[in-house]
Image 1 (cartoon, chains in turn purple, brown):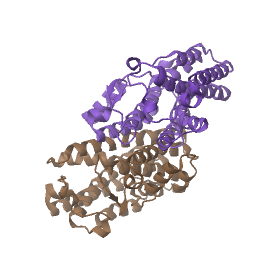
Image 2 (tube, helix red, strand yellow):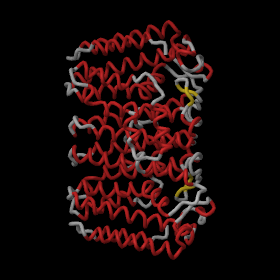
Image 3 (cartoon, chains in turn yellow, blue):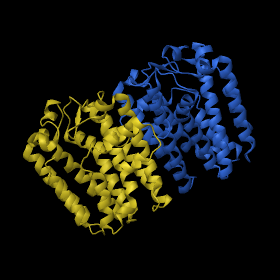
Image 4 (cartoon, one colour):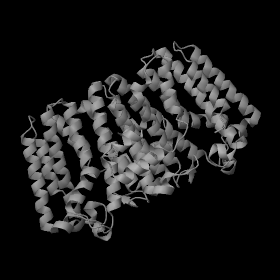
Length: 275
Length: 275
């Protein structure tokens, strides 16, 4: 990702701000999911790195914009100052805009995918990231602040805000691997359920976690009056709900034709992670 | 464009803010350029309306973000309140993000273009709109504020900030029309020169125009200490420079195999427009 950004003929400050956020760490769960699907279906993941980086570009842009003063107004992300704290608000907005735009260019650049596969990926990515997906989820999230949400409303927000991009990740893997449509549907369901489990664990860690592991203060959801899974279901109820979704995700994996051990490990990692 | 937005399964407030800006008027010069190229090469423009709307989506997103308080901080655009004045800053940022993202989906949706043509368009659009194009130009523009720029620096900013998207528009027309690569290069040069002429006329109108025609106050460039063509070349020098670029653009048109009368009319309209 840094190589791609470094070779761009773009203003130095813009490249610097894009690189800052892309290099700020993070779990890289989305590209890992895409590459793990390729491994599971015996495709060489190295052939599709650029297309897979597109997903991380979109994820990174969404974090930069979510952190802005007019949105969540966060000063720190992963223990580092957020983009607008370092580069100012205008540069942060533009760095996000540029990362989103370049993500589509990354997909077109790939030399192994067919044009049909690229168009399918771009269609999946734009739907997952746009008004019907991630951006729509962020709007619902902002509108749901300081309100008591039902479990259904909470799931609708998370499904859009984070779920769709996780589904997009496994679909990228499936499209690159030329899996059957039935396999694509099971992979998508796997991603949907680990997505919900991931969010429940996020909410649990905000109650039970440790600031050093998380890179951010604990208890911020409660302080921000956010509706969370532990708040609706209790801590034990939330843990059971998470385990239920992991179980369903593994059932979907079993129904595919892939050698999906690595994808099962990712599902189990979600339960055990401490950040 | 409104039809596409109305059918999206997205939060009502998000759709409303996207529709507000898309329906705010404007000259629609970018889609008109693309459709005029198709006419010139005897392709039915109606078959490519969705792909062409993608360009206007990107243009509209860029206006929403440019108007934000941390950027140009404009309260009015085309005589109407800007997005953040109506919907708040967070919604305005997200409406822009969504329009940018949906633009790529619009191209994938077209039922006449081949996957090869779609990938080519997406590549052209992402380069024109991203770090090497429009967003890069906006960064240079912000950095150039309150500085005395040379003619070369001024042209570099405009080339990126507005020129690349005008080039993108004629390239969309050329790709849809399956023109030769030589024709594509001449069309791109035509767009580059009318782009510069367009910007010079913008600067001239800011000195000599009338607030009712423009939908914004005159003299704002001088008030904002912006470097403009009249400031560097004088009013007469700027007019001559504009005419030179229109002349070059018409020469490039003559070298194509198209029936380009309508494109020549667009070039001449730029000189004569009063808003």
